[in-house]
Length: 224
Image 1: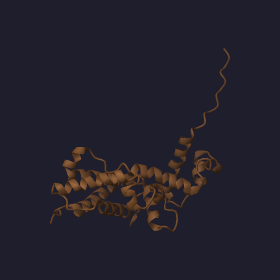
Image 2: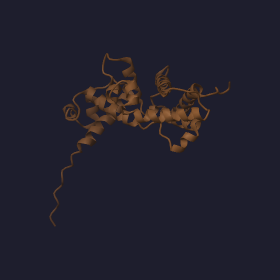
Image 3: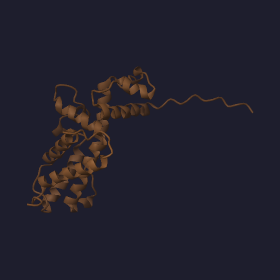
Image 4: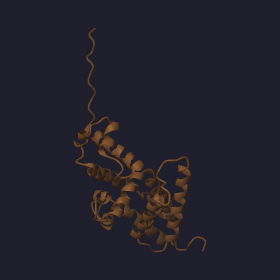
């Protein structure tokens, strides 16, 4: 019986290659920071030459904006809860605040990209801002994060109606927990790097963020 000719390996689909590039960029940012790697650092482990990356992304900044868009898509899924969650506002808020903290700890590259944005307002590449399509407030009302913001606002309103929360602007609440979380994860110690105490650190960060959030929204301050 004649032997079947060996088929050459199939080329990876374009989308799969783009995703591989972004996956490795995310890994490098988490370990080395936003400006701590080159396109060669992405290409070498993947068995590419740097020009091959240019078939998918025009530049290093283009890679970072595309990665930021991926993070924005994931962030837009935050603050989700079942309709019945509005009947138990405090319990539901605790759950979504915990999930919000875990999201950031699971994506250290997103945290580092966010901090770059805050450090270079209109003075450099604001990757997350470009990926989201505009400035912070505009994104929460008309951009890709608008649905996330509406879910948060509905929950805070339900808490006020139930007598559990004081009247609170959703944008102020979001700004509080977001800024606190970003700083907490990198200062005074970088909690984004791996380590044997990661789970304990994650629990501690979640509890700290929830304590802050509850004190901010509660109609009656716990322990007062």
